[in-house]
Length: 454
Image 1 (cartoon, one colour):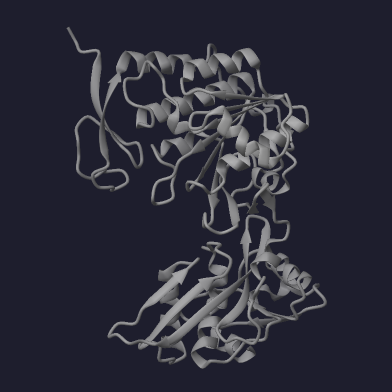
Image 2 (cartoon, helix red, strand yellow):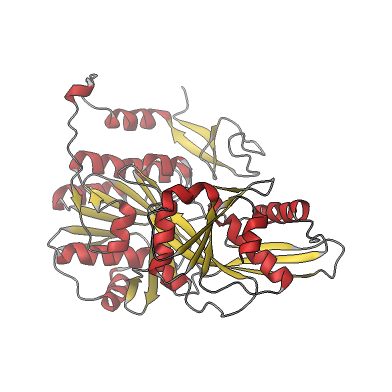
């Protein structure tokens, strides 16, 4: 008689499945990440068959309805911006972030806003008791009767409650605590997380319920469990920031109903998360006056331009090998830009330690801040301050050229709005900026010209 259960090995990092244990995952190259789980093949087959539609037939493009998705505006402008204008009916949204960053607080505020608008909301918690949830809710404000709470981890029970109560929005906190009785592995395992997400996805699509699920993150900052989790959902949101600081950044990593890489900025206070409508003003708050090694640059986060302060400190090293460290930007990019300065401008930086910081705790990966980093490093090295009303942005190439960047007009208008007088931009962007008045725009072709300007 054949065995009902089959031993299968899963990678904890990416969800790769293997029939035998391996020291290194061939998919994500992680070491010692395989865990053993018992899988019922007949059960998996029946679960996949439940997901299959009763009728499947191809359709032509002319038969497809192009009407816009039905959206529900939450009332939290920063979150609505990241979602693309509100919650889409039948969508599945994953919210990830470090412990204590504010995921549960944000979703409880979402529940309050929706219930205040008369929407029926169900908040399912697998980590906290009803009393604990109410203690946190009291800080946020009074809750309406249309918000229902449920403390449960059994997927079958949760599915029955959703079908009986028929809420418009469901919050699952967190997906790692949910389990299916028919799967033998423990809650939080690869099989359980994948099945729980699959069940929530089926409920969202079949009943038209908007579902938010909270996901724990690993030490690398990605959602714990199989990587397929992010592929299954419609929207992936990440909470960033230091849990000990007051400001939080909500970043949209994936969005099937809107643009990606949109961000929303919040401040954590006693009454919950408060929106920051003008992030540029917050990022520049406390900028030192007439200090060397400091300049303002502009980064595009989705469709939003954000002005940031770039700080650099260059000092003679006490060791045989100079130290290069960057907070908020890529350290390898810093090494590359300093090599360009040394090669193209004959600037002796091989015996200098260099530290670069993006003020405000935000992480920037866009190459448009290259010119700002270069000018901040030169300013610190020569100990000469840059005019406080000057802003610079542009991508720097290996030959020292300054390359054009996208959405230059939006960046310059944001600088103009905050009172900046001079903007150093790539020469290739001048044509798109000729209609902007009230701010001096200087186009540069290489880093030598940019340094002459400051």
